Length: 327
Image 1 (cartoon, rainbow, N blue to C red):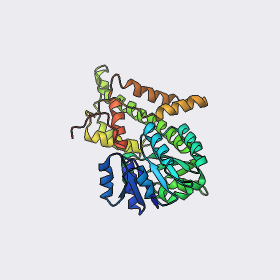
Image 2: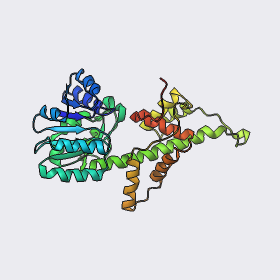
Image 3: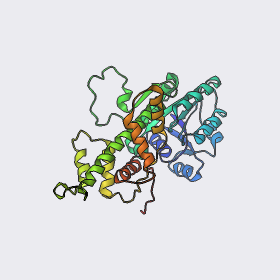
């Protein structure tokens, strides 16, 4: 299939690359002309702007927007809407607030344009591992783009099938789902990221306790100097707390047991706040996720080893930099 890709940053560029590897044709554009030139050098078709990108697509056109949530995405969606025709599809693959998706879909519907929101997980590893996707939009538009989603998804891999799933949507086993109407994809991804905050915080607190077991405040015969890299590694092997986050933690600790490159100031990119807001709206108790969010706020005032670990995990899975690397 043919797809336009707007935004060629950490994820957008690799989305285009993964699609090209699968035989799809990508027309790409970014305000950074060097990013466009790099992908054009890899055999993709570069565009000089949004109008040029749309003109190079055959109807029904589909354009994937992979930009930061807020004004960059909003302005781009509005500009594309003015250039596209009934039956065309605009896809937002970033981390947009789901209520904005609902509004956009309702605005574009009278123009005959389809709007799809794709909660995209995979970060900087997605090119090789694939992207887990949670998709919102009309069945017609989502089904039309199924070859695109199938190419981006991780596939079954070596994960064992879940007993009792017979007869259910097989796309979930491939790593993508049609979650529901507009906004549903980003809502599911929003909660996914809220859970991510909680999981990361649990690892960070646990390793903080392990590291401080040699504290001078403890009786001498109760102090241990524990090997953080080895603990992370052994837990990866058959432990009930094994996960990809733990894999990434092990990578970070193996490189630097003290995590000295990470200051411990932990950013939040919005989804954790939105998850807590949704919990309030639904009157759902979410103590762990809320506490994890608040810990990130506090981390900007003073920093612990656990917060350095949070920062290290964010760098490993998403390339998020809260520090300056010397190398």
